Image 1 (cartoon, helix red, strand yellow):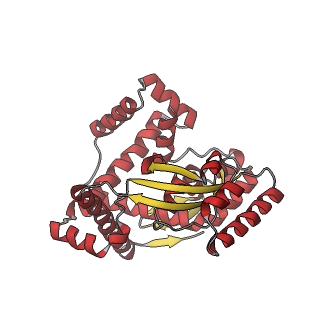
Image 2 (spheres, one colour):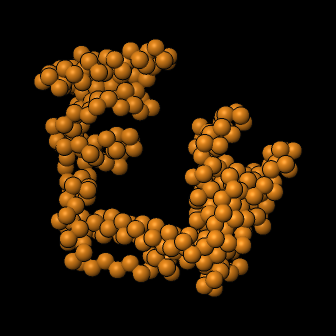
Image 3 (cartoon, one colour):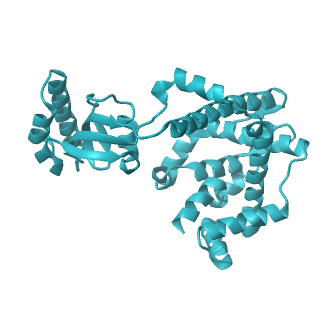
Length: 318
């Protein structure tokens, strides 16, 4: 059920229900896109939907402050959505009732939900079955028009892939596993402790840059069980690394030491002992095809959105 809730939040906008204040703001127009308007309440729903868990947990006053600071960016996103739906309408692209029902059945099957489970989940999120269907219809239409105008027109030849690999060797990750050593300072309980830890890590990093042995410093400073082995945590497959570690280590070269960085476990300094590449040429080519395809898609998509905006009437009233 948790997975369904995440999908739901990503797919649709939470129904706005902010008491009497909502009634005051409901008809405030913040933008006009050709013959359609975007209201403040619609903008608020989008911001509420896309907010991070930390923002969602804020007090209402703090949350509104964050939303106020990001109103313009979210409004631009809403305008782009309106333009795509309008273009789909102009080109006769729609979504049938059958397609919507099939999509709903796929969602229920994916999350092992009965019809009652599905409706109960919608109810907990604050909107009706018909409201959900409307949002789902819009998502299906946008997928169709983007596929029609952009994705289906992208052709990548074998020569394109070969050239891309040759020109972007550094950006194609062919690594499956990493051998890593680390120094960890456990997460602090107070701001003062945090500052002390960061100062200690800065001292350790300075000594490493001056030529000190990583394993010796790991034994001396690390607060992780791996300290006894000089910080060596062995060979780890990429998929088992946390997102924070993957982001750092994927940009490193063998023998390189990272700057200190925080994770939920604490403050880390890592040394990449070795990268082990086990992907064959076919896997490398497929990865290159995917990266190149995404690159071309984003370039064409952004150009298309720019074209839609240039030929449309857009008035922003924030």
